[in-house]
Image (cartoon, rainbow, N blue to C red; front, side, top):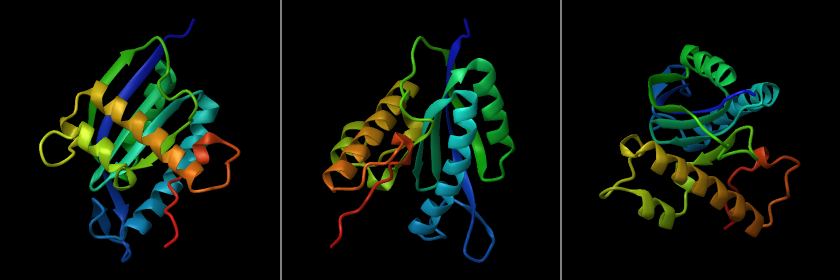
Length: 178
């Protein structure tokens, strides 16, 4: 029997800005442009994760990625090694790597949540002090936050009448038309 492993890490996004320069954080590019670049990451990650039987979630926020990878220890280690070589990540910090009995994100090859789209009530529940700082959260709290945001954004899509995707992974936050 293969041991199931979970890896939780944070990193700083390093994306190409409009002028092609390197970007640490997203304040120097538009939010929509950053999310479009995240989509490119997600397409590749979901394909690779499906092939490797990896599940998980990616949370993107101002100057931050937080990610959970679940699967066999070998598959998770291989995926993480690839992430460490990816120039779109810097300042990578492992928060937790351990064997687990079950997956927290079993329905997603890679759920995606935009921290700016997180419901204010969830942010208030998980923040410490005036700001939400996921780097200061315990791995347990970060997992709970990521799971709650992914579920809330999936529910918002349904409430807004977004078409039901063929895969849960394809859910993206849809803003209501003004």
